[in-house]
Length: 132
Image (tube, rainbow, N blue to C red; front, side):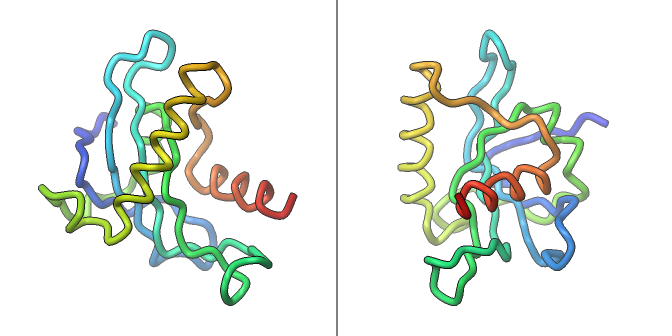
């Protein structure tokens, strides 16, 4: 199923158990990368990532995950809303932009990649990385 993805969209997606309130917001798209095609940049909220150094022991959001468009589409369930202004879609949009800039620099130096696994698995990967 091909979905029309655009910045500002908020999606329901196939979440991990216990995170059914989580939402995925598209914050940007890099079109036509030579290797990956369209790279979709997402912000995830409503998470319950174990993190002993976070307040309450949980990280509640991921500011930036880069995704191959076709792989991301497989995890999306339903479009919930569309925002024209990213600042209205995300209260912490500036940190998301900073995370994107750091990724982009590393990506251009072949030091970072993009996700192709289901979103729930990518969140698990982030959680494992936090734990060390």
